[in-house]
Image (cartoon, rainbow, N blue to C red; front, side, top):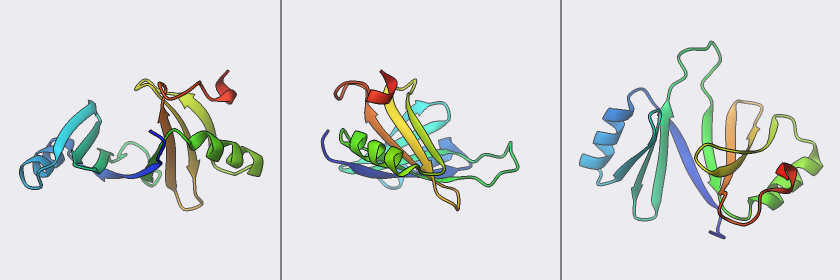
Length: 125
């Protein structure tokens, strides 16, 4: 994948109800990636859902997932800028390379690419 996609990640108090609604009412195809993570797709549309964080006192972060093979250049630019709220690349259990940036108001930008797209990021070698 060479294009970069932006995918909203919404909070859901009940992933089963969300999955059923998007499938039965809106015609999306649900995929439970993990027990606490849901992806629904319809054609080129992809939406992600995860549960609310009720166990901590911190506000629940809003998220946007930004996916594509070309994110390494964005990562390197962020490193050069010395951003606050920046978290380096890591390899996830779901076989993605991801890094994160939180804005001053708690919006979490998650950048990821498949571990099968190219070599591991230079920061992980």
